[in-house]
Image (cartoon, rainbow, N blue to C red; front, side, top):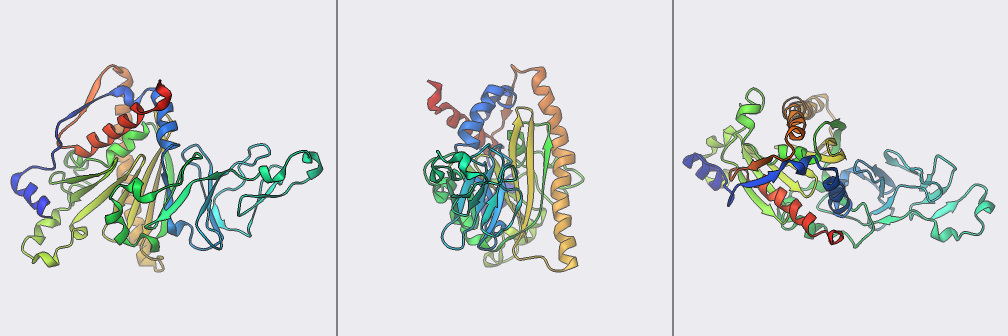
Amino acid sequence: MHRIFGFLDAHTTEMGEAPLVNQVTAYTCPERLARERRLLLRGEPLLVGLSGDLPEPGSHLVHDAGGVPMLVLRPAQGELRAFLNLCRHRGAQVVSGRGLGNGRFVCPYHGWTYDRSGALVAQPCAEGFADLDRSGLGLRPLPVAERHGLIFARAAAGPPVDVDAHLAGAEAELAPLGLETYVPFATVARTYDINWKLVIDTFLEAYHVPQLHEGTLSPGILGTATAWDAFGRGGRMVVARRSIEAARGRPEDAWSLLEHAVILYLLFPNTMLIHQIDHVEVVQAYPADADRSTVTFSLYTPTAVTTAGARRHFQTNFDLLVNVVEREDFTLTARMQRGFHAADEATIVYGRNEPGLAHYHRAIDAALAADPARG
């Protein structure tokens, strides 16, 4: 809050070291997207939910927005498990949706059946596969880990997921939030004609708020005096509410940042976790192709919503998130996406006053440059 007050007094905002020039082909090139899929969306741990998405032993969820169908489940004892949600017989998806099962997952195609350890336990007409070792036909495991109320999984085999290493310091702020108790309230997935990185770009600067959101967000949110801190390849942006000025005359021990700000965490590479006053929003982007992406919006509450008044309150907040982003941000960025193809040798620039954007794209470029398959 001292930093924000300093920005307000100086009529400025957080400044990076230098502007960053980027090629528009970063948003249009299919070959680049193929590398982003392999290195980032399949090679990096991705947030697949909060602990409340698997509320009790025996519950499971399916996560496939990234193009790799994953089954994540909470066993009766021990840590979470994750598997590639593909039957070893003919590749059908074994499980859909989420829920609380009886410990068996039956493929809808031919009835091959797996238990919660991923082992194949039943095959109709098993004699047709007598020459195959059943123990080698279980669901393929994937790395998964749960910490601070966050569930991360990797969509490809590899080393264990180290959540704290991935958060790179952000865990010191996320751990005290008590996300372990949060429960899902609403979620929706929609597809837009924009590159997946434009989705994340939308939430990494408040510079656009006074102009684009003049009648919706700007009356309550400042577009300046924004604080940014990097955590590894991710980071945290604090966007001040106009009400923050009211805190100046109070004793510092009575200050509450959350009361007067929106706190946005970039969970690299494709997730924004947004801490609001009384709930948490999660926005995730997955590419369909270079010019289209599927965006999942979710809202979580600290405890289960049990009254009609509370339901109306949180539904209003959820609708505001989806509708403002869709009607204002994504309508504009869809036109940007089309424009990129009109001059695909052109460049765009992220200003010093947009340090989160520059940090994000430098991190992506560094990951792609380190691709061992390049040479």
